[in-house]
Image (cartoon, rainbow, N blue to C red; front, side, top):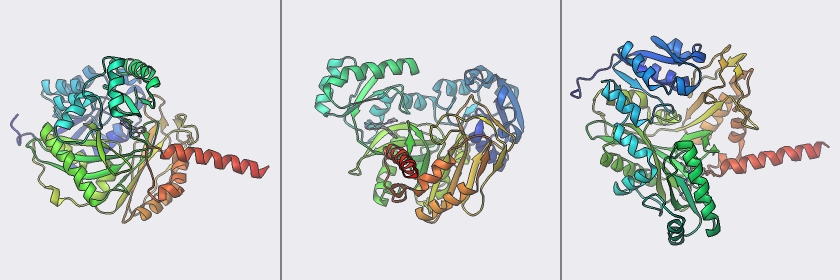
Length: 465
Ligand code: MV4
């Protein structure tokens, strides 16, 4: 199809939850009709109610519904949509799904299938990004084929090193190795775990960075070679590779470092022939050196913090880019204003992190200046036990980080979710943590925080006695 002549009248959203709602909101603003798909147990979700049309595509387990490619494509055909937005998770990073969409003449709202496939293979992604000029950590240029090879490499790099699954990402199939005698077991463990999780036991090694910060650059690229970045998100606060809260800008990045990381990410995306929205993830060490970690070829959960500080609508940009439109603005048109924080509200016990699905008996959302809530739930809704536990995202925007923290506290205090447990009390405590407030955070923050909060609790018990 010649670019420019593409104009979407109807889009299918191949997802559920808050992100399906988020995509529908922008479609409405653009005058684009929407088709929701849902599993048996998701009939009562708001994404079904907000969409112009809806189809049940299978039973509760995602393998039979939200991951069901034949059901997704036949629904798209029956409803005669022009494009599919995959959201995040599920089919968003399936190069196979992207290929099938294109073969069926349905535009996949995302990057080309070839780039999705390349970035899904972490060994290949590392090689490609190095060639495209991004700094990478010293490590194996190819998959590890023997323990001896790994040992020789590890000696060159120096301990500690990390063994990572090539098909991985998000922390599965990873082992930190602090001395040579642990290496054999680590290779074995990582490879077995990767083979079970991804049907691919390929692993590689890298120098391990202690307590790094996770900083990611949001990029937007059109199908005509234009590419810009929307600054960074600080995503260091996570537990077991699940992010808990994110913010923009990072409290530690100087304007110079932001420009350096942003320009490096943009240059690499241009070389790759990237298009659509994407995120280049970096590790930042304590010397403020940054290294490419992974690239996410989808919209991300935490995209709203970037939207708040840039006034960009990332979903709108994705759709316009997929329609073949040029970006229409340059890096110089972009400004970062104020500070945004997002707290992920999960249906979980805030102390044990055990899932807490069930009936929401009372519900109140915060509002007022600088508060945004992305959610798909409401009073009387039953959170199903089959999917991700995130039920809402509370995002605040204010002139400074201190004001954003104060704003988040009053927003979380006004939010009511009864009938199930949520992570709201945990976020309230994080907002009061002195290290968090000082911006003194790294990927080790939650270990410190949880240890400290456990200790505090015991102290109180001891004094009470
Ligand atoms: C690392 C690292 C330190 N050094 N690689 C975790 C998830 C996966 N995407 C990569 N991860 C890491 N890779 C080297 N060479 C530390 C982590 C890491 C981490 C990264 C981002 C956010 C949270 C994290 C928590 C633990 C470990």
